[in-house]
Image (cartoon, rainbow, N blue to C red; front, side):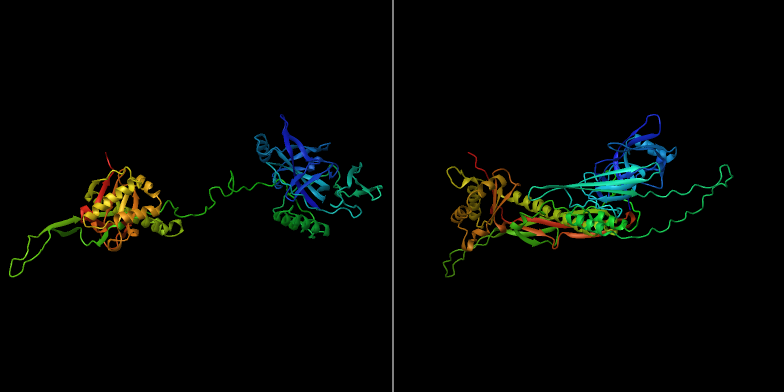
Length: 562
């Protein structure tokens, strides 16, 4: 036999008493149970003659009863019940929860449930519970068959979909129940003959035997009852397996997708005892909603450092020559007047001569530094699960150094040392102002006896150049600048956009026009312990400088002005 707990309707309370009333078992409505949904028809459940044996608990906690039934009655819409909350702390709390709206639903507890084709055919009510909400709102799972009918009752099988079955249960004065099951089925033959088959089966339903009353004569002295220190464990329930019909029904429901794995497991486990329970109003175990088990404790997926753009790529330093730095001061010279010779008449005549001169050239390197006093917990506790924090830290610091050298050392020195020139009037030219300015600057570099290798173009001007077909652009530059053979191939000429120039400006230069000096291996990584403060001092250091070798090999071309 099977026990069941079915969620029913909402409760109503009496204003003057501790009583609540409601529909305990609605008829014809699918009950919400942990083994699925099924319906209960009138007469299926047996009511106890004394309603007080039906206890009331909270959320089906049978060890903490909070009241008893005072009325059980079967009506047209279902079995109605009235319960009175006990005058105890638990009873007061349950009544308070009801009045506050926390628990306003009723859930029945019944034993000896017999299920066939989604209907309860028998059962005995033994308890009820006030609950918050149903366990499976919106579910459509059909309950698998459970329980055993008397052998002489032929149950309706799922194949008999066109059969109409009615059931009626009557109870005599002695409490004996008689169940009558009537099945009507109509079939139409090939010749049009209509055959109606009616099967009526009447079965006496055995009620539990009542224990004999205590034969002690009325008025005799009785010793006070003593509660034992320990409760004797109930005798182990006799185990029994699933019946053949139950096993096939469970397998069919599983194969059709109407039975969940958890439900199948519950059915298999509970079928091993003759008296097992089927719970409907289960407590919700939420995930991350309000009151969820994982709120504030669930571990997120760790992503590490998130990409926020490409690391800084140096744009200006690679355009020029590079040399190692060994001192903060770098010094050299240029020819003020280069030594010259000329044609000579010979025959002991004077040879050509001039007065050469030298011009000293010097520069000073700049210092770079960046450091932080980092709590040693980042290392000791391996923040983020590994040492990736320090890897990311030094990577970001190295990027800072690269930007510093590129923009504050190289670009500033180049712009300060370049020769300014105004572009020619581009009116009437099909190549546009951008290419025209590049050609103007390149021609000046060539005139200074240098080979132009790059052009930095203000961003908006570069866009106009980029929209010209590439074949036309390269062909025009090749024809105009003649950057071929020993003078350099055109594909080595770099045209690069930048937002560091003023509107309409172009900087054309030769690679040899500038020398960039850096300490080999820079930036230098330095770590130290701050023992007194529990820290790790981490930092990067670097040294760099730039020197313009030939200013007229750098031409800063400004937009044409009429």
